[in-house]
Image (cartoon, rainbow, N blue to C red):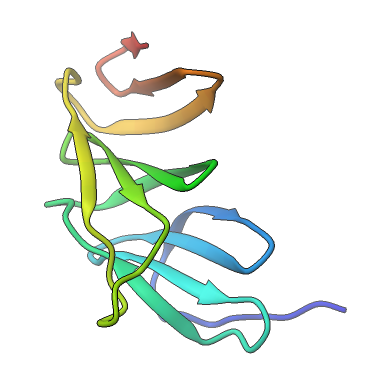
Length: 117
């Protein structure tokens, strides 16, 4: 069965686990939507520009942004429905297009033509 979720915003990136989908979109926080009712569960706020990409790795969510950073978030939400950023990884001089986690490594690449491990 197909489900269509209309957001009213351009979605740049998506990732999912068994409980939710996580959406990166222009001009706002990362949004976590429950797959059982397709309603917003929470938000991940902290990037100062558009979020382009997402990756799940165990209990953390990784995000790359036009603010040239990769952020590491706890998937767990507080009572207010938000999550705190655990770490901000810097090094890019232009927007981050993709972030991938494998084993103990986080890889990111961006418009600066650089891959950071």
